[in-house]
Amino acid sequence: MSTVARQELYAHREVRLLLSWIVNGHEKVEPTWSREAHSYAYPELDKLLGNPVAPRLLEELATEGLLERYTVDDIILCPQCHAADELHDRYLCLFCDGSDLQKGVLIEHYNCGHVDFAPAFSRAGGLVCPKCSRSLKLIGTDYRRVENVFRCGSCKRDSSVPKVVHVCTRCNAQFNYEQASLRPIYGYKFVERFRGEVVANCTAETSLADFLREIGYSVEAPRVLTGASGVEHAFDIVGERDNERIVAAFASDVHGVDEQAVVNYFAKVFDVRPDLSILIAIPALTARAKKLAGLYKIQTFEGGSMTEIMEQLRRAMGPPGGAAAK
Image (cartoon, rainbow, N blue to C red; front, side):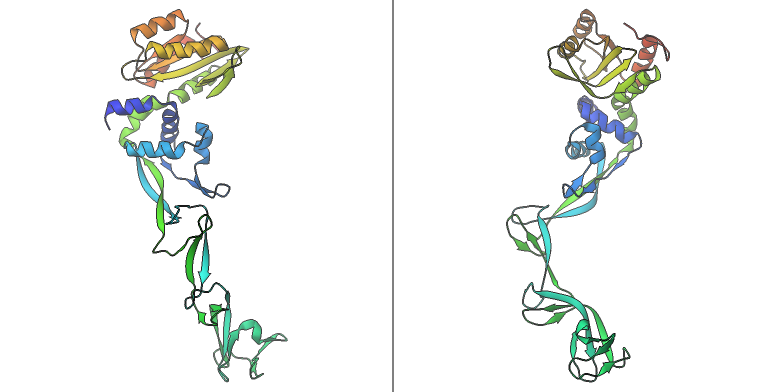
């Protein structure tokens, strides 16, 4: 994947949030089993991103080389309808495929050769052969025990293991391990050689949110605000302090963030009417976009890295406790 292609990928907010989370201590990402959904899921990432798009994004980042896949499990699929969450196992008789199985401990009485499940020998706290009525006292001398035996109620034969098949409740297919399909479940490991690039391009929201908290704002990122029109608008960051509200958005385009991005942002800002609106462009605004932002009184910051942008923000907005630039 080329640098230009990766820059286009970083332009997506969900990608930036996910990669920022990964490089800040979550370099290995694995799904967990959800009992409710009866499938693997990423509840922490769903909360971070606000919707269940984590599997798609992780796969996209792996396809583009930023993450490396590794298998953590295999899910059994029905070979007929490909269902995964509507399967259960069934034990069958090895000899007749009957499903009427009884599992237990067998006892064999050496003297008369009678064999039956242990409950048939129980008498008044001891063991008595139901065939010859003799007491069984010494294991290994009078009798032997065989654990985990399956007896078929249809053909009456015993086996130490059953035949295991999978049954699909969606299409009623019944199949064994040879016929089953498998779907790998992946974990993902961050490819370290991209760390510098990802930090420069994808930690913007976190850096700005932390800075606003430093200077006394309560911050939500992201947050939806309802405008005067009654329409809801999503902002990447909203900060509030002493009845003052700041909204911020991020835009990225390797060819320069154009005026359409500014127009779209201004439409939201005009409806919400914050005290200060910030637009952060990575790596830069086009000349026309910058002029338009000035006309709309949108505070803009540009830079090829978040370090560069944060230096501008600190100069413009002052030290902790200082007033924000207008």
